[in-house]
Amino acid sequence: MAALGAGVEEIRVHTGQEHRVFYVARFDEGVYVLHAFEKRSRKTPAREIDVARTRLREVLATRRRAR
View 1 (cartoon, one colour):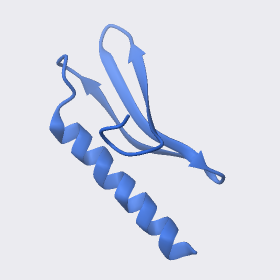
View 2 (cartoon, one colour; view 1 turned 90 degrees about the horizontal axis):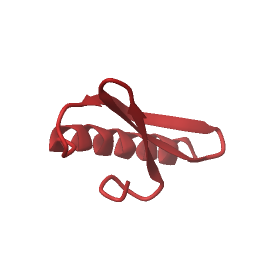
View 3 (cartoon, one colour; view 1 turned 45 degrees about the vertical axis):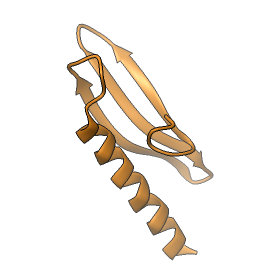
View 4 (tube, helix red, strand yellow; view 1 turned 120 degrees about the horizontal axis):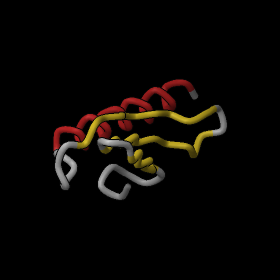
């Protein structure tokens, strides 16, 4: 998902409703799920993208400090 950052992918779950999961899978130690939500409109709300973007920054900062 280019809007969030390099390496961020999206899973789309189609049931009676639409669900999205943003995650990062480029790290050896595991997969980081950044955000999951129910999508209620055709366009992904900016608020949902902002939550995932903030969490990505937090993951990257935590990894940098751990080195």
